[in-house]
Amino acid sequence: MKPLLVVVCCFVVIVVWWMNYSVFGTSSFDSKVWFAHQTDKSDVTCYRGGMAEDIRESMLNPKMTHKDIENILGTPDGGATKKEYRYILGMCSGIGMDYDDLHIYFDQTGHYEKSAIIQH
Image (cartoon, rainbow, N blue to C red; front, side, top):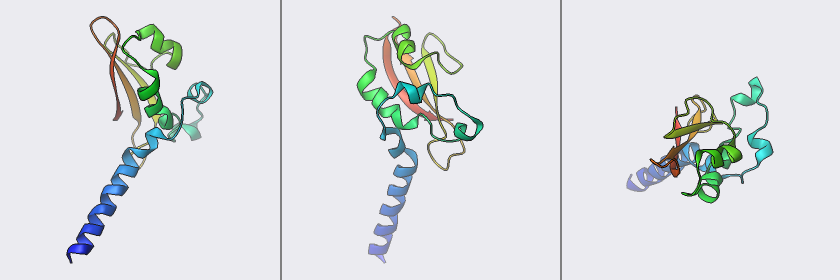
């Protein structure tokens, strides 16, 4: 009974990880894909999600200002403040019912501080 329980638990962990995290690191940043017009059909896909980890790990750095980030990623997708920008990634995690966003946070001086991928 214990070996079966271990196998089932491992399977569940892998499926949860795959559904929620693996999709965000599948592609390098591509500005053509990032800025591509979204149709009603593509809007319900993970159209930017695969690039999210590449952006976080290799593009964003503490020297960057709001303007630097806008030059790369464009105008934030609504709700932008001096402390936070938000970019929609698409319906990426879970069962694809909610949008995932790349949140970019700024410090008091207006420089990049940290980022997070958040499902809404």
